[in-house]
Image 1 (cartoon, helix red, strand yellow):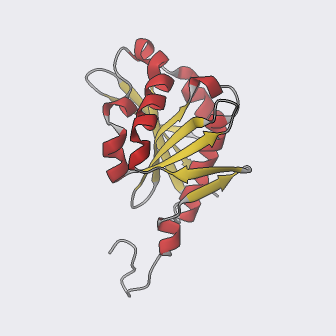
Image 2 (tube, one colour):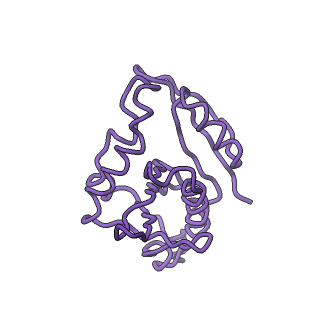
Amino acid sequence: PENFSADGTQRLALSALNAPALTVESRTLRRANASDAAAIDALQQAAYAPNRALIGAEPVPLLTRAEDLLASHEIWLLEHAGPDGGGLAGVLVLDPRAGDLEVWSLATAPSHQGQGIARVLLTAAQTRARALGLRTLRLFTSDKLSANVAWYGRNGYVVERTEKRADRRLVHMVKTLE
């Protein structure tokens, strides 16, 4: 029902909703499936590990296992090819909602940090938002991760609000696409 207007016209083609791949800056991300769950969890655990001490709590994206996220979110994988046979370089978890696209998690494998993977993933989120007919992207990060807040700011996101939780404060950021 959400994909149809009041007059019964389909808003988005099913091919956009069910896209198996996204191409950004000559890199192709593929849609994750159930067989990827363990690799997604491992990459996210490794990527977010340094944040635990800074935040003083488990990072929010680690509170939900990939197996559960696959049922409710879109998960996109950026793989790399290498002498070791390859593997995951990055994971992008998106939550398409009625009026926006939430970047629920953006994680780069520690061995690939500093290589522009996060930028590719963030650009992929924008590409996906456009494909879904959405102009607003939202995300959150810990207020203690000031480097993340600054990096998102350099990429066009602005602070929308700060949410106080029992064990942390989350900075919610928003970007409107042109």
